[in-house]
Amino acid sequence: MKAVMLTGIRKVAVREVPEPVIQTARDVLIQVGSVGVCGSDVHYYATGRIGSQIVKYPFRVGHEFSGRVLKVGRSVTRVRPGDRVTVDPAMFCGHCDQCRIGRFHTCRKLKFLGCPGQAEGCFCERVVMPEASCFKVKRTTTLELAALVEPLSIGYYAVQQSLPMKGARVGILGCGPIGLSVLLPAKLQGARRIYVTDKIDSRLAAARKAGACWGGNPGKTDVVTAVQKAEPLLLDVVFECCGEQAALDQAVEMLKPGGKLMLIGIPTVDRISFSIDKLRRKEICIQNVRRQNECVEATLELVEHHRIRPDFMITHRFSLDETQEALDLVEHYRDGVVKAMINVEP
View (cartoon, one colour):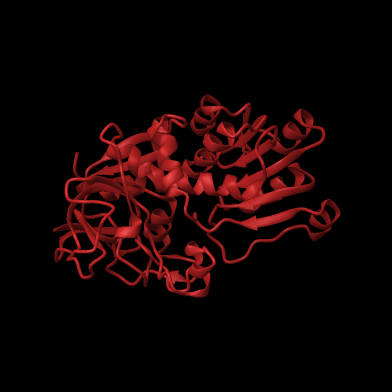
């Protein structure tokens, strides 16, 4: 089959590789339909690593995908050949201490698509996944929208882990796909006012259209002062979605005493810092968000019942052969890109 491999820093090759095969009774062979280009894919493409996860070339990235079931193992019951599915890229063992308490996303033996040392990604024509990772999609839902369920589920999970949204004053720093994936469920669940920041004006416009009450570009505006002026009592929760030190500092200034800071963005550096004086005096609670846990099905239901409408996020489309062009576009934030999709099969 055809696959797109990383062969070095910002180097990509389209190659013929062996077909994946079903190896266990619970495996599902999937024809890849649509793949979203994620910021983590771009990290691996541009730097060859995310923290301790270092690419050994050649390697295939990609994890946000949907497709069509081609074949199933003898014990598979939830899907069958011909079904259209969205896929949770996390593959958990089901037996370790973390799995036993329901923390499947921090499984001790977790394998994740497109993660170095764990599993090859889905920038290719076909993939084998465990049955537990496959969620049947209605015929009325496009494969592109089905592929968006993965990042949307991260936003849904982050909101779920933060605090009750009804009446909340919310900040979202970074309006890329993950920031927007936080905004949609936060708005749905009753957030009173949502303030957003981003260095790209087109993303601010998209966020305002999706329900943000205010958007500011920190390269042009003192966003902290603007939010403090609009909300003298400050914000209940801030979702940091860009992984930048400046945004972390801004978040602490925007939060009320007793507020909550949700860390979702992936920094390019190994260490970040905070003013402990401000954190302590405000008694700020900090929580990291590790992908998502058991939120794919609930998110898919919201999409299929049109309770959230993420279509606007898709701004660019590419073929599998054009994957490097897509990665370059997303890395450099060109042409107002929000979400670039690789469409392998209609």
